[in-house]
Image (tube, rainbow, N blue to C red; front, side, top):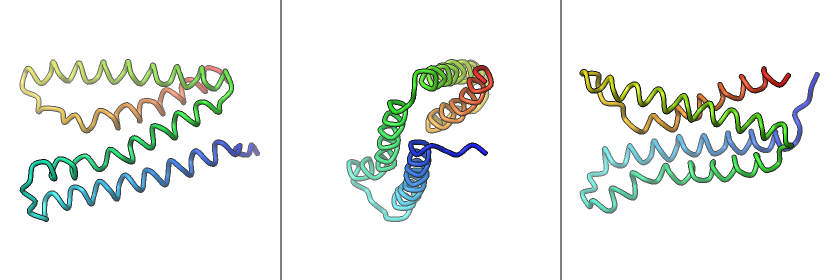
Length: 131
């Protein structure tokens, strides 16, 4: 049985912690905006943007992890990211045209999760290609 190397364990643990943090902060932000009756536009903006802090930290975690990889692993990650970017562009572009014929508008908050999910799909395709 293959064991997970230490950088992978650390990366997964950190990602889990920050994913949970993101969910908690997002819930708190949305709850506060809906229920606290805050009318000051600047304060509402700051509260709305609070979930971006854990997302920014996740970006730092990802960069650190990528830097710890060997050349082949980096190449696979690069291919996965390119796959994700191209597919996200195609899907959002196609949906943009569909909005022109009456489909409901796509909320941009879904673009980042789409990128992330497609990155995972790209990783699976790259692993399959290089094994």
